[in-house]
Each structure stands twice: as C-alpha cells, then as structure tokens.
Length: 214
Ligand code: GTB
Image (cartoon, rainbow, N blue to C red):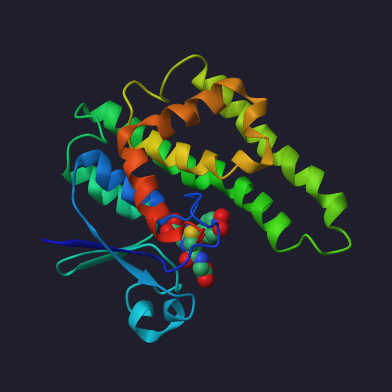
C-alpha cells in the first residue's frame, strides 16, 4: 500500500530540514519503506480537504490505505511498531525507547519551541530582549539534564531507536541558537543522528523541494 505524507509546498526554513516532515521521512528511511509526498500550501492546510485529515491544519500527515494519521509522535510510533529497526524486541527495552519518544516530545521539545516562538513571533515586542535570556536558560536546564543522562553513550538507551530519532530531531532545531554547542556530548549525539544514511536521504529529499533557487 502506498504511503503518502504531506509536507510544506515551500518550507519557511528554506530546506534546513527543520519542518516536521523530516522526522517522518527519516523514520520511513530507517525502516526502508518507500513513500510519496503531497505538498500543501499554507492556504490549503486550512481548507476542508486537509482539515479532514489534520484537524489543526498542519503538516505532516500520514496516509496508508484507509488509515490517516497526524502528529509526528503517533506517526513515528506507528511506523516503528510495525517495522524492524526503530524499537527493540525486548519488552523492557522497547518500553524505555517509547519513554524516550515521549520525553523528546513532551519534555525536551516544549522549551525549544518556546525559544523559537520567542524569537520568531515575539522578537519585535518591547519586552522580548528582557525575556529571551530566561527562555534560553530554560532550554539550557533541559539540555544539562539530558547531557548528564546521555554521558558518553552513543544513544540514549542501547541501540539507536525511535527515541533517538525524535530526540535528535528536536535538538537539531537548536543548531542556529548556539545552545547545542554548549553541551559537547549533545552536539556530537545530534551529529551522529544526522550522519545516519537514513537521515541523509530524508534531508536530501526535503532539500530537493525547499532549496532556494540559485
Ligand atoms: N505536534 C505537531 C506534530 O508533531 O506533528 C506539530 C505540527 C506542526 O507544528 N507543524 C507545522 C505546521 O504545519 C510545521 S513543522 N505549521 C503551519 C501551521 O501551523 O499553520 C513546524 C516548523 C515550521 C517551520 C520551521 N522552520 O521554518 O524552521 C520549523 C518547524
């Protein structure tokens, strides 16, 4: 059955791979599943046809036959549960990998998103300069904790898993801020994720759509 995901017709990041279709592409590449992409404009996202699949009018979505999913966590979990390569077979190890998926999306990503919003959406507010250091410190706090847990390990808990895929995806959003480089082991961890052939293919596929015209 053909898998179809949606992505920005033109990603605002110009192909840096920060939009969330990249993590879905990455998961599909890790398990070796072919997929097609339906590009959606910012306007079309808010129209009935897309809203029938994604009630919040966002990308990415995932369609496979009669099944339509939204939310990258649910999509990556769906892929990982059904295909070898992203979740361990051992029950306890699998539960811990799923725990890291949740940790990435519910504990580490929120302060990172807050920082992105503080810069992009609130940067022109008179109070923004005063607030920004506070928001950056909240990100630092989470990174410090994550860095302490990761230590010198390659991945969060044994072999690479969907937990690492989501955690690395979340951390990559921080690259332009310089905050990731304050934690050498996290910067190396994110680079290890980026170096995976499956990530490279996912990145190249989204870049082919979004790269600025020369
Ligand atoms: N929780 C949802 C999920 O994980 O699937 C969040 C989905 C989401 O935020 N989608 C964004 C979207 O559709 C695109 S990825 N936004 C349009 C809208 O809400 O109207 C977020 C994103 C956008 C742009 C950049 N960038 O330019 O750097 C990075 C990330």
